[in-house]
Length: 407
Image (cartoon, rainbow, N blue to C red; front, side, top):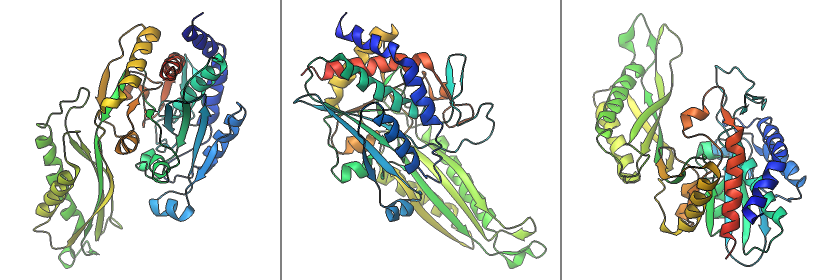
């Protein structure tokens, strides 16, 4: 058999073990918030030790984690050097949004049914803890001379922006790979993604009894004026089309509203949290200034006050020309394994990959998953992964690593 066929054969022979590994990862909750994710890192390290990998544990200091809005966080690095040459890092995140309502399966059960595995993070992105770990194991089992190294980066704050995950590892110079592959889906190689601006808008009024509303200042009425102005911007944003395949236009979403004390009380405070997706062509500073302008103009006639706080500014990922060897390898082996072309594209999501890109590390996004986020039920009830995609994606990644480490 060729080396590539040997890799495929090893993955097939150990696939039940790979699925069991993923089930055990799903069964340790990592809801973020609250973000008590150090226990999952401990469990992951324990499982990796069973494969002969000594994972470096990099706990982020408690004060830093709490200031960030999380509870506990430990990042993991596994390093495997085969010889002199390039280093390819593989990054997946273990933190997830809370399950929410509507599940027909146990969100932390890892249940298998109809060729699928169900559970929160089964698709995004504990699945690629499994993809990348077993691709590396297959590569080692091959036993052939290789030039270079592979690193596994398992991090835990993608839902909060990645600054205490990959950002922390990179800032502390704990890693500087030559290439980066990050968790994604199986039918496209993503080379660009949107940026994201998240802001908190606090509208301060004055509480009053609902029977005498004129003695108060209704914060909700002030907030409604701001909401209407913000949503009106989406009509403008729809006219700004990106030239990156897979990315359409900017968009603004208000994802959370809190306020008021009771139905018979004029609300004295309302808090809005908004998410503004930025296409790669946009300038983040200009986007933030414009959102602030819209809010200020909408609040001009309001008798109360308005505070605006930035929660997150995640830059977009633009295609880096240096990623071509990695992208070419993924596409070539994706075509061989899946029997169809695997195109490059952008995605409207934002990811931790931008942090590697900001450090000049050529990157691509590829892993186990369906053709679209919608099909995966990511961030919705009954998140799932087709096991056939997990098997094939593991083959593609193992093959691509072998090609990259040929020197």
